[in-house]
Length: 404
Length: 94
Image 1 (cartoon, rainbow over the protein chains, first blue to last red):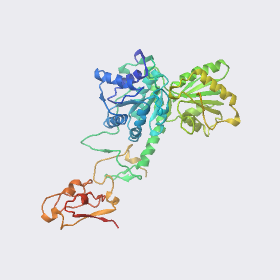
Image 2 (cartoon, chains in turn brown, cyan):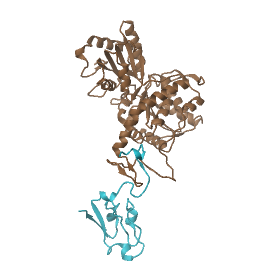
Image 3 (cartoon, rainbow over the protein chains, first blue to last red):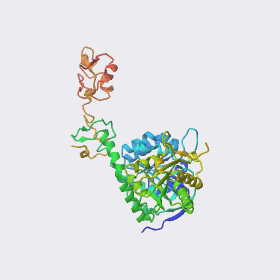
Image 4 (cartoon, rainbow over the protein chains, first blue to last red):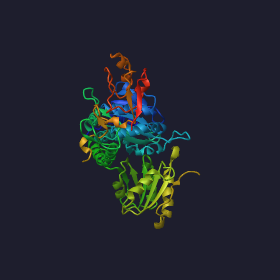
């Protein structure tokens, strides 16, 4: 068992910076944006004071930040970046690139609403808009999970060669202080071995990486049949499909090393006898737990399912967790405009063809920092309980908790 | 047989002639040099070589007379544009 480490009062951004430091990141490139800025400030302070042996590359944009990280990762350095909202959107092209190049880059996404209109407060539209870029996405509920998830993220990314994004709610977590256990550097070093790149730039053995690749497989100059574009994309999908196993294994080993176990892709709260399940992601899961307690007091058998891993989407785990549910109420801090909340769509997709036949209701909440109170979640669940009928399994569009 | 045997997980190759395939197949017009006009051919000694310098695919030799490797010439026509003696014409592939 590990040494105890030390417990400090940290906000989410500081927890993220400490996680990066403990992971011994070697190259940091990030462009400041609210609410992520303190992460970059803290890390540059660590480097400047000589507490962290890393190159801090000051860049002129988020696009360049991730370009620096992908390059650093290609030559074998452990790379770190962080962003939010418009900054993450500006990285979009390079997000695809990092995943397509199979580089285990790490990104901390401090979830913030995206304009127009301007808004610096929290929702999850930014990271949800990047879900199809081929990154693993993990959502933290509190500051301890931010730190723990970063250390795990490097193990996961460097095992499966897929970049990992850890997402945490802006202000709700990023600027809120809570006790966080900092493991000792020796223990983290034991848990997280040095990065072994699958690419390496060596003047003695020059290689081309991510060059123009045609539709069809092609025999290279050495006479070896090489992947076409589509085979490489298949391999990325395969890597994400198979990454669940690695995520679970790393989470279990983290538990053995540090006493905090992450042995599931989900957070389950009082699901054993629940026929009504609240589904949420990020810090909203904590609020949902409070709502479930209130509903339990009123005699309803309510549980909470928190999505920890959003990509790869843990379909089988979700189906198993929702086995006994008759009513599923999904709260989304995002929306796929013209349809519904993204996690609701994913839940429905996971349940297709399963034996679960539950009423599903979707509520859009907390966009642009709108406060989400446990009482509002309780009201939404109560309304859903009233409308839950076999012939009314789903609604065409989600309901919104707002003043319109 | 599938492509897994190459053991790559991203697109990669060693820099080598032909690593992008026979790029000459891309060509829709090809360069023809008129030795009556070419400075190198006329003087029969190393001179000019602007076509060699500008060719983006390095398929033109710095020799007397110059040679063009048609296996890899993509037919971009930069040599024809840059030639100060107007010795290179681009002819449509049939």
